Amino acid sequence: MIWTLVSAVCGVHLDKKRKKELLREFKQKELAEARRKMCLWPDQLRSLHAFLAEQRFGLGIACDHPLGRTKEWIQLEGLDREKVLESLGEFGGYCDCEVYFNVTRDKFGWPEQDSAAD
Ligand SMILES: [Zn+2]
Image (cartoon, rainbow, N blue to C red; front, side):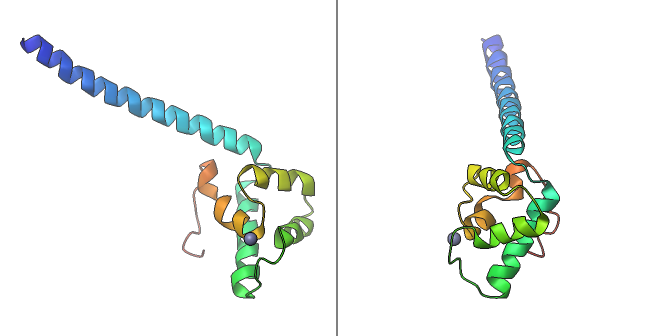
């Protein structure tokens, strides 16, 4: 009877630990997959967000047309437009505000170093 109790307790413990491991594994795979689909580097994504924040909130320009400011930024950075837009679209960034609110650094496991400035 006591052994049943012990193994039951251990079973629960192991199960929880294994579950946590699996969850972490899953999360790592998910992040790796996300980074594979994203052609921008962490710094570039941060730069794009800063640009959008300045354009949208600083100058008070509304999101009038899809990806207008994002395309402006791509041109300024001299990046491959199709490639970047495809990457952003993978994460729900189909207009400037969606890029700002949906394509966030945490989706790729990149720390928000300057979250205080956002
Ligand atoms: Zn928008």
